[in-house]
Image (cartoon, rainbow, N blue to C red; front, side, top):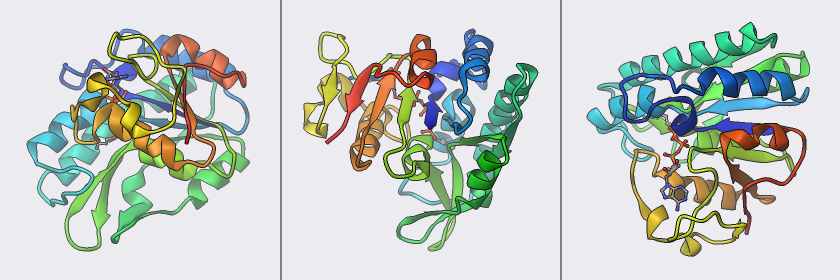
Length: 234
Ligand SMILES: Nc1ncnc2c1ncn2[C@@H]1O[C@H](COP(=O)(O)OP(=O)(O)OP(=O)(O)O)[C@@H](O)[C@H]1O
Ligand SMILES: C=C(C)CCOP(=O)(O)O
């Protein structure tokens, strides 16, 4: 099972490398409810996006300048995530995509470390990161893309965000989204370098079985195998 917890949940996105007030509670829930086959992915929030934006690095634009600075910031968040999970009794281990992912026209990611850790009883904790580009420099690889790539056939994918789902123009949560065209003005924002909710929906639509978008208070239900939030599926 794949769970991606967004930076909008774990951090104050407007702050400067600040974890959110719910940080400990959310990770305590994950530690308590995690099934044996869980892979946890987290986003960058206020740890990665400000650095990436300042240096003009996104999913398509590669740059050497700022690559390490951006990676180091997300790695600081990852360390806090892993240490908090372990303080709640889980054997969590970090996996940094900068060391096992790259781009060469397409996105490549060696899944061996994640699979071996999971099989050995650890909880692998992967994150949105900066990866090398074979054409030069480094670009951003989002946690959303990683979550979809790491899922094996028919594996459940869940993405937890502060909005609690995909919302319509009135701010009400949609039960299902089957195409990007269904996104309203609200979801049209290019509010960060990985294109916010639009990027997330596009990623989930690329997964054969789709996935769920839901809120932090539904993590336990998702981990328990229930249908939660917005189902995003072609
Ligand atoms: N129509 C919409 N439905 C849901 N969320 C929306 C919509 N329009 C804008 N948003 C914003 O998009 C956010 C989700 O995208 P974003 O990429 O910022 O989240 P994230 O994955 O938690 O962050 P990160 O990229 O740091 O991991 C929501 O928290 C919400 O504020
Ligand atoms: C900005 C960086 C380094 C990673 C972005 O990953 P995301 O927060 O999952 O979109």
